Length: 85
Length: 291
Image (tube, each protein chain N blue to C red):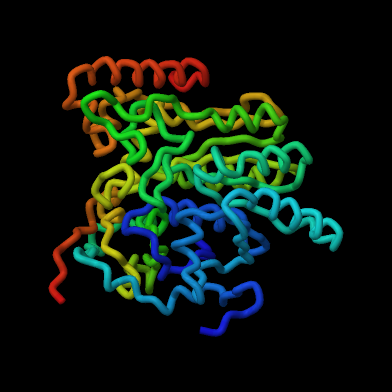
């Protein structure tokens, strides 16, 4: 590995590592029950829940399956289910 | 919300600290330079050659983040770029113990540096050793609870009071469970010229021993039991507190975490819990948290 002066790294370059591989449980969002409060997006430690065409969707490339979103959802619109790989 | 802390970082699933960091950066904005000491944050955000940071970020040593940030402040003043926010984001080990000398110097010299501590109440990165932020009677690997001990024999160091004693213009506590309050406090710290100190409650799933999904709930319980009062000191005066609408008994908080399991199993545990309740009651009285 070639080290740059001061060991510099490109901004946001952890994106090359897909931490979704760590996951055991996967969040399943009931978009009908969602009231779009955006708490799941705010609390997500991976910053991987985003609004896509109006719907809050976890990016499964990075979601580690911690379940914070499901626990904090005021309408219980997110369920953590065992993922079959 | 703008996202300046990229996914792909290596924090444990359910860690509170990345949530704190993304909220801090959302409030501070892209015109920000961050210095971090050694700690979980450094390790999980910058596994070389990668970096999760989307603002300028520098790591040097465990003890000197406040000194590094002081230097950045001097350079930015010389360059006439005083509108850039200079932050330190550090864990409690480097804040309460290892870096406190450099922090004291930075506060005393009055640098325009906003020092933010994500407080998970022990050295988590190296394996849950006690820090001076660890609360009373907590089980850690260096203060193990067992036949003759209830864990950490000393109360948590009052770091915000130490900052206030340095005449730091803005001192506040915050919690990942209260994101609006947290962002408001970071913004306010950035607006007031001179040093600031913000201490953020950030539960640790491995060190505190709880299920990953419960992180935010536990941070909220710390506030609702008055064990983690949310307050602001502006120019040395108490300027505002987050009121607790219905105060919960400390057991509600303690029983959620493996690090307090011994208090419910060991003879004499009830007396210890009563002492912790007295600490919460004292917080409620001191800061006027109720009513």
